[in-house]
Image (tube, rainbow, N blue to C red; front, side):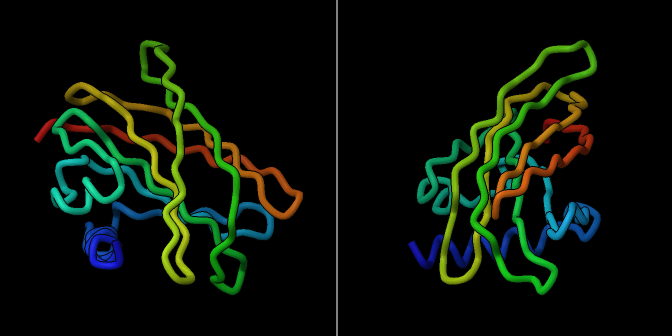
Length: 138
């Protein structure tokens, strides 16, 4: 699993710089990105039970305190496309060492644009992460 984690971490760090974004929400730094699951290696996808497909996106969220320390959080959320179809996001926690990530899979069609609303609960607080992403079939 550590090898797969190293591959996942390397992948997430090597995505184009504009792919990862950060929002300050209350006392937290919330890092997030969304990308096509075909970017995952077969080994990483298998290790984390993720399906590689040109029609699946991966939503990746990491919650940190202001000092950059990873926080354990509860995440729920939904993605709504431009015609109003809502998909519930089911996040799984990936924890290795001090790093903690939350991953969800989102099926899409080419050029689907989704508006994300993600509820984050940690340390007795609740914050909402909102962003928009367009997905393309590669």
